[in-house]
Structures are given as structure tokens and as C-alpha cells.
Image (tube, rainbow, N blue to C red):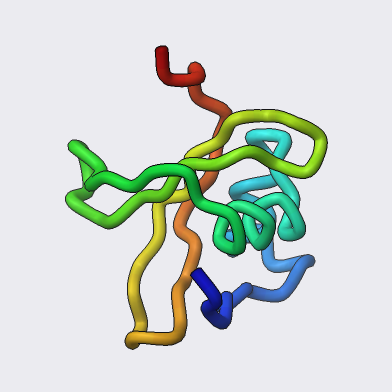
Length: 85
């Protein structure tokens, strides 16, 4: 899924970069999952789209995002989740 990813400034304490960092996730992890998704769903709490995939170091994460347009997404949050069985 090749998309442009919108990021807030790294130093923006209220931005998406800092928010995902609180969960131990970095921008390159999110980009890797968008490039290699293994599943998708809709978030129960926010009703936003979400994708699942493995980071380059093997962690299974979900990325909840907002679709800006057909080619652009804004990651809202990302965090590790249990692998599907």
C-alpha cells in the first residue's frame, strides 16, 4: 500500500510522532507496515481505518490512521498487538 504519510514535527509534543513514540513505535515502523500490511480492520473505539503488520524488527503492530485522500494518510496512533492465531 504505497501512500504518502503525513507527520507532525518530531518535536511537537501533541503530534503523532510523539504519540506513537510513547508506544515504542517510530516513523520507519509505521512506514514499513504501510508498505507491507498483512491485514486491515476498523477501530472499534474511533471507527477509523487500521492496518496490521510486522515492523522490520519483527514486532506485530497496528496503525490507526485517518485517510486524507486516496494517496495520503495521517497516522493517529500505533502500538503493538498480539499476533493473530
